[in-house]
Image 1 (tube, helix red, strand yellow):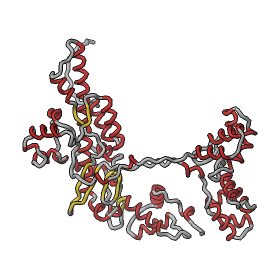
Image 2 (image 1 turned 180 degrees about the vertical axis):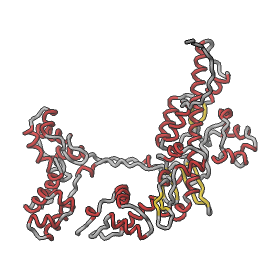
Image 3 (image 1 turned 135 degrees about the vertical axis):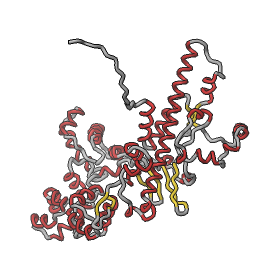
Image 4 (image 1 turned 45 degrees about the vertical axis):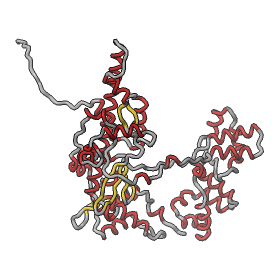
Length: 487
């Protein structure tokens, strides 16, 4: 069997994820807050990058010099400048000429953003549950040993106000006796907020009943033996078991419902995060215009110092040391240009996606959320000539400010529900109808999921009961058995 050596050529295509492409994809899916952090980090690490600041009255010479070197074609009122600032016309970007200009994200329509309050400048302080309890220890007249034991117990109080760690485990970790800890628990139960330091829900309610001076035998028995029936609102069953009139049971339940099942949440830190929109939609006349939100995003440019070094205008050390410095600057320069290019691409993509959404969802902007249309990622991807995965990244954690409120861009993408007349209705519209039906129901006779299905069918909406249950859970609406109110 003869063996032969042959030479052949094969042509193939492979998609390689270059570092620049990875960076562009990463920036595309970042939220606005994460993008600002990434830019600030790059500004700290890359000396070639600098933040461009608006010229002030203290810099008249520099401003005059820039004005003298500007040709009429470069003024803001010229058609060339307007086209350069319009994201719809920026299909290609000449990065070779970028070093002579500063970066400014593209903008479709200006105005309006200066009226948005910067909530990050609002500072407030709150007292933690731990500090509030330790403050009461200092006022209780306890000796040093008792204060030490109470401090141990307080350190195991969770954010809801409970001590869920077993006393044996606490005693082992803190090197004290279970008896000593157990003796101090009743003192902790006397502290504010009422119910703090309880081991479970039952004990929490009993402590609050004692604080309310409502620790009658019947109320204590109801809490001890009928917690599950209270959750199901089975008042008739409780009355039958306790052999008491239904009216008495209802009165005791009213007292219990005034209690707080999580007493510690009053002192939970309010971690409120205000949404800053990435893009604005304004109605100008009869049309809706899209404007990118540039407020807060650093405007980047290449440092003149390092440009001059590369051009040879500044004397550098000779030999290998000077060559190493040049290579370092070149590397940082490429990184800076790619960052600026990626940010520019991100902003332009957000603009194009939002503009396409506005075009597809005209009824939403004109009439409200009840008229949102079924729309999938492919609809927008085909419209703007991009891949669905790109549209998905753009719409994640990106928010748009509209005349109808602030919405995540993903809000506008939803499946369709078939109607009896052959049309389709957006799932968001169906959710809104379910929410309205529940809000208008009789609280003493709430609508079951099957009844909601029947009511929707009268409006021509074909939907299964399990789908109603799924949408109800998404809307955080309890089942009908738990929505029922006797008083």
